[in-house]
Length: 77
Image (cartoon, rainbow, N blue to C red):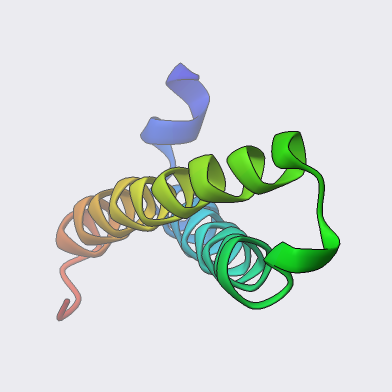
């Protein structure tokens, strides 16, 4: 973990990837929880609604990582 935050370029890449995974989870959770809900079991619907919360959380964590890395690289964020 220490190596990750010591390398600003790697931190930025991981932050970007985390934001992408969060976006994909959010879209998947929205589709499962609100679009295809009639085809899913109750457990799958609950999981989809939980993913709707987890997705934006990952987006925020990835964004903070990205801002931190870009600030250390002296780039605009």
